[in-house]
Image 1 (spheres, one colour):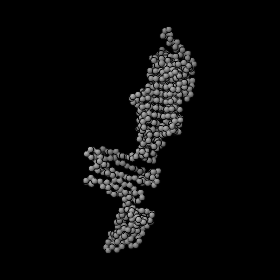
Image 2: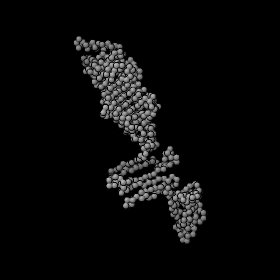
Image 3: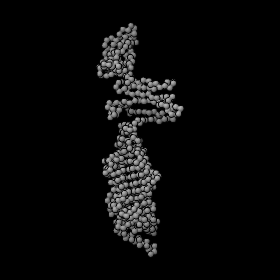
Image 4: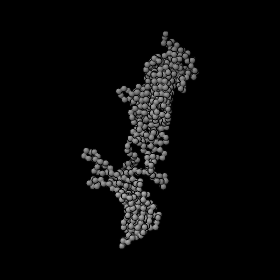
Amino acid sequence: MSSSSGNDKRRAFLRGSMTLLPAAVIGSVLAPRVQAADGGDRQQAMDADVRANVLYWGADPSGRRDSSTAFAKVARSQWGRTIYVPPGTYRIAKTVDLHGRNLKGPGRTRMNSGDDEACLMPHYSLEGPMFRRCGPEVASLTFNGKSKKDAVALEAYGYNTTIQNVFFKTLSVGILVPKGAVNFNVLQCAFVGCDYGMRVREQKGQSSPSTTVRLVGNEFNYVDNGVVFDGELYGATFQDNIFEAIKGDAILAKVIHGSNFIGNWWEKRNGGESDWPAVRTSMKQQIINCFASANYLVYGWKDIFSAGEHNQAMGGVSAADGDLVVRSSTGSATRISPNHICQETDAWMGKVPFVIQSGYSKAHKDAQPLVFRHTSAKGHVHFDADPEHNEAGVWKGKLRFAARVNPSATKNDKGKHKEEATLWDEYEVNATRPGMIGHSEQVTRNGKVHEALTGMPQFVKWRKGDKDAPGVGFFPTNQERKEGVIELSFNKGEYEFRDPIVTVTVDDGDIELAGIEYLHAYSGAEKYKAYHGFVFTFVTRKDGTPATPSSFNLQLFHPY
């Protein structure tokens, strides 16, 4: 038989088999990709499309016979870059090497198989994957492992590959990439009842990181694992995917760095451990510098994007629950909400500095100003403590100013710091007594550090006969006992001054302070220098006779 007559018979068989298919499907199969101007070119284009169709090479769309040989023949032929699979069921009994050819079908139905889809099913005798070395595009097909649940649908080439609108059902692995994936796209696919939806292996004996992997709009339903990378993953995007009723991991890699998680949905576990991380790495604390937004997790999934605890959470930036969380991968974060900016750390982190820093201006050779600004001139700056951690709800910390450097404490002969070189001025509110306590470290010429007591005292202005003078209202008892004797005090048990530093200045030039009597707060209080008030005695400078001044000023500083 001549080659010409053989081709004619094969075309006649193909056309005969197509009479069983819907007219719309026939049109899609035979529609030429190249629109020719004259009849001869059009016929040649139609012949090319016909020969790229697996039916031309003897594939059985009924699913009763093995079609792997037909797929292998068209993959080795010269006809086109894309293998077309018309509607039908095709059994694959041995691995088909696609030699870089694309593989496309007419589209897939919803979750159940239909007569108008191209369904590829592994034969029970299949060993290895159904297809390997696919081209850059695989689209609009269904892979159903019903007859061999341990089968692998696609062993895909890991570079510049797009798999779109494909249904993977009841398989060991839907998509297997033998080593790292680069510019690998999985779009609008569905994975149901598989052990692994997609698995990217690591080359034995060498690291095979994956980069620029994109999974968009896919569904993983009742699978043991969704997407698993044995190696490291960089610069990936997971967007608008659904992970539902999964037993193991939705997304797993050794390391995940610089990746995006946007608009994904996690719902329910299928017999697996509850409170399981939505995204996990096999190396601890290695989800680094990622971005997450609008992800939703319910029923058994741990939210690593916006959880209050930051151990084993996503490092990077997360926009969730109305907050912006900037998190390290090792247990600390800064949270920005509509009403506050706060630092959060796990209990094991210890002290982690929280720094607000302005930039350095080269033009002015100085730091840029740091400004806290109100929209109104009557605004206030408030310092307080989180009520959950302090029952009083008041600020009880220290304002620390890096005031100076101790030059003798910089480095020793071995170039190491002998002690802390920075010297501090510290101020804290005295929570039990008025005023503010301060400590300032000063250096003498010989390099010795001495601590000075500084701070802000309590002020009282006393005026004769004026019950509303500034600061006087602090004392319940404000009375002139007799000429030249004035008492300012609390009742015993109401308030306690502990070893105060008392300073009195008299506004009248001819009257001076003669002495102070300290009123003990309780029996034995003298030992602790604890007082509930004071009695001041004033006399004239001229002859020392008792005299009450028209006004005097009292300063009380409480060092404790």
